Length: 531
Image 1 (cartoon, helix red, strand yellow):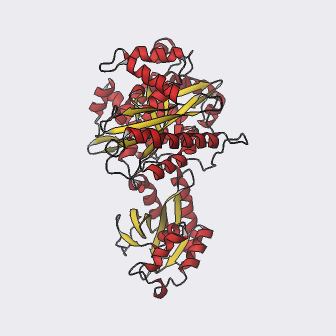
Image 2 (spheres, rainbow, N blue to C red):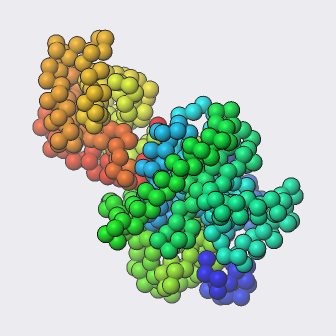
Image 3 (cartoon, rainbow, N blue to C red):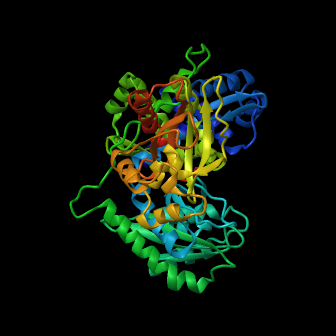
């Protein structure tokens, strides 16, 4: 945050433009993020220190915005709240630049790799690729931990100016069980060697090693780390084998961020769809919370930094109103001033991104699938490859006298479904040999004699249509689902009985509708989402 920016408490007491109600609304959102169970209005009032009447209005506002939902147990965060944290991840090129190199690290060493950034006293995980291990640290994108307790934090603290570091270390003197002298030694070690290790300090049983990622001026921008269980990897392996791999990954990430051309590559995507809102705006909705959250979610790949004029235009606010909300958000640490513009800070990840660890693709897809099923009068499904089968992970059906008895978890031969053909078409040629040679998959006598040609056509056109290949009377069309980096995560199909829908409608009506919804899914398919 800009050093000249007054503290939030000082502004609240002295500046008439400070928006108290926005601060309280964000406190309610943080209270949800810190709790795993549903919260009643009374719970919220107690946790935040406000009246029940105020708590009810804040909860109602978050529900209207699509960030919370009400059930018999109380209010909970809804998947739509992830859009707030997305504002930081979408506007910062670091996570997407690092992700493919984190994936490569995981393939090489079989352990989890992460990208972290520093904000105030805490380290935030901005990108993470988890290894396929039974036991691993319970950390997801958005998790924050005290900086001095981790290898990545000590690397990042080493990038602070001397005065800032002394201020940090001085504040640690009040913390029981923490030795500022030991932390200082580890930070200096990281500076001197260009890497450091934490051996079972944050989490018993977990060893971690980290290296810095520098910008072209040599400033520490972020840190890359590998974490492994102590029973699998000893400290010597971390130093001799993992540190060189991390340093190479950091260099490749830097090259991706600042290529020789001087232009940092960015993907051009459709804007994220807004969370679902009630059709009728309740009279008790708190406008200041709605407007403040609009400011936070206005940032994306195309708008990584904005000035007051741009923010007021994006959120359709008078410039004077935009200034009040920006001033409040900056004083609270959610925005950082850079010249005349502002950018989101990692602190926004605390506003709901904790929900990610408990969400599955089915949770995120539910409302979109149900709406598409009603629109098409069809069964709509999402599937992923599981070996050479397609596994259904989410499904919604429109009312119909005919029921297709497929539920989430069902596995069927991939080559016999539209979704499966989409996913198989993207596999290497060697992997496809197994389809033709697996027991029970006689493609030569089952309508799939020209499977290679079929998959080649699907690959070229980007979609698949099958007519009564899996089951007599059932026809389906499918498209891939991609994340914001363009990687195919799953496939989505719409299926109907031949008696209800003409063949031509599958490609003229159903296919465009599927593609539209697939574009909306781009920002839903976040790293760390359970498939």
